Length: 149
Image (cartoon, rainbow, N blue to C red; front, side, top):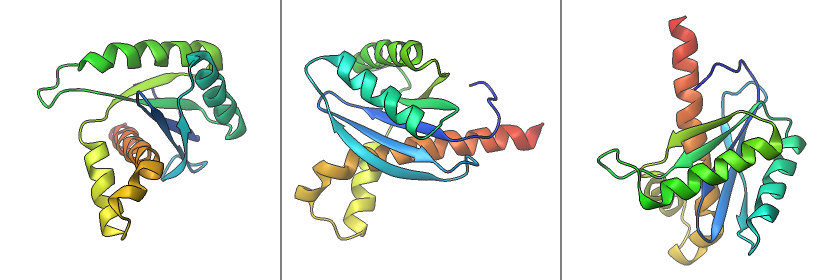
């Protein structure tokens, strides 16, 4: 992870059917869920949509959740995620940060349960909540590194 300095970040939870999106505040302190994109047949359309969102929110970088096994080894989905992230970086011209997303979807479901949402309602928002959790982890690490300097 490079030190890009303060700024807004966009985070994505990249899935086979949906992509959860979250964005930080301009100071890079907090993360808010933004939307869930339904994946399209042509992955280039997904890339364009995310690049547009990055421009709209004037972000300094993009954080992509990397699916890892509990052991820390990469899951089979990780190679697809890496390839997608690389293409997104090339299209957007922004730095891409891969971030461990272990247990974020499960934690997102727990947050939604506690907020009173029924399981049937989770499909629409769980991915964006997971993206916000990914972004929170990234922002916390970024802040910790800055404190050490």
